[in-house]
Picture 1: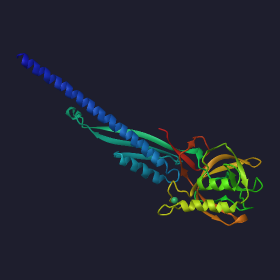
Picture 2 (picture 1 turned 60 degrees about the vertical axis):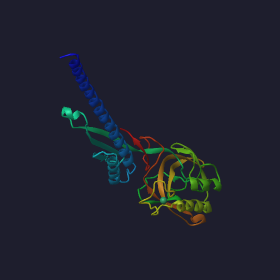
Picture 3 (picture 1 turned 90 degrees about the horizontal axis):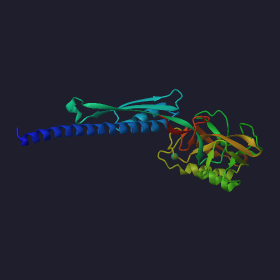
Length: 298
Ligand SMILES: [Zn+2]
């Protein structure tokens, strides 16, 4: 064996080491990449699914499964907690290895776990200038969001208060503006709000019908099936008496606006209580009044 032969052996050895390194690096990269893909898919699936909670457990499971499947995850397990406020996703994806096959390893498995919960809303933009006295709200029931004179089901605690709040300030002009477009600043649990006395029925008609008219979704939205951004879906502060002509915010509830009826003393706004998930501030310790922010917790 001459110098040339030694060089060939040396070259062959180098090539083996090099190929081994390439195999290691490539397959390691492949595994890491797939682990990241599966982890992201599990997170996205949990966050998408939780938005259907607590209203519809089956829908939450279907949505989470679809999200995972669209991200190439073939083995998915979705669990919704007993109280329907939390969803867990376990996802698995089989990786076909490229180079490690020479070592007898054909596949590897990427696994991920994610959990999300519907956390009670504590602060949000866009509330309408209507306050509902705290009570045990029942899903799917109709409520007066502004009641006719003498019709206050909870008993009037401020003379002349029929459910209207002065958010930007007092007066019918600011009231109808906030009713149409929502109050642009953040309203939070604990805030003290001023009330607005009277029926203001003309502006109430104008504001509510503006919202109903803005639903151009096809098919038209209903309380059972609506677009999440529909103008007929309103966020209402849940309130309790605080001081003279003032109330305190204790939570938020979502309503699908059904109708505005009657003029003057007979003027009502009717809305159906629904569960709603929105972007906003939240806390796991806040009271649960049916509005939530989706949060990834694991
Ligand atoms: Zn709509």
